[in-house]
Image 1 (cartoon, rainbow, N blue to C red):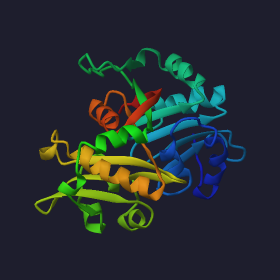
Image 2 (image 1 turned 30 degrees about the horizontal axis):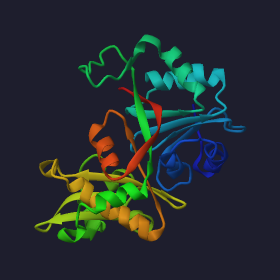
Image 3 (image 1 turned 180 degrees about the horizontal axis):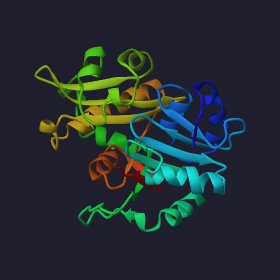
Length: 276
């Protein structure tokens, strides 16, 4: 795969607009909201693109030729091209799913939450990723059961941006605190002066805000994630923004939280974990 110069990232935008599922993470890269990478099949006349977000999510899309797929893409999937990190890959159009399944063959394992996860001998694990749609009425039913005035919140500032640790936290989705504070938003749930849970904009485009959230490990399973995320959803409603939620189907905690907050699953997509 050929690394596309940043000055040419706009070439990846028209075909990205044809992708029919949630691709805000890829938009954040090609529109240069965050420092990711864009690869292509041809630097002069690109027809296919492979976008990698720094968090590890990737998207293959466009008019993917057999030559590009069977050589450059295959080597990347199997880690034969020097890939140094694991990835979570989505593909468009949908016929690429069969191509990947066939080309990886016995190097791919299908994720099964009921079985022990032994990835020995596998290069790729096939999961599913769920896109949700926000249901305002169902969220309203949840809001009737809680009183946000019983809790203390504060906006995520520079210090919280830099100090909040975990997997799904603002500094894993934005280049730096300055850009986050200018373009994004985050809310922290405070208990005794400490931020124990954070909800934030992982990606923001047009009138859409994709939600990210993290709760400190010692404060989990106490409902704090739903409280702080509900506060951010109310911000979205006030500002006329559409809350967006996607997660891996096997992430039962995130899936259940989405349902609790009024989101409805609308599509389930192949989601390839590229192992190291």
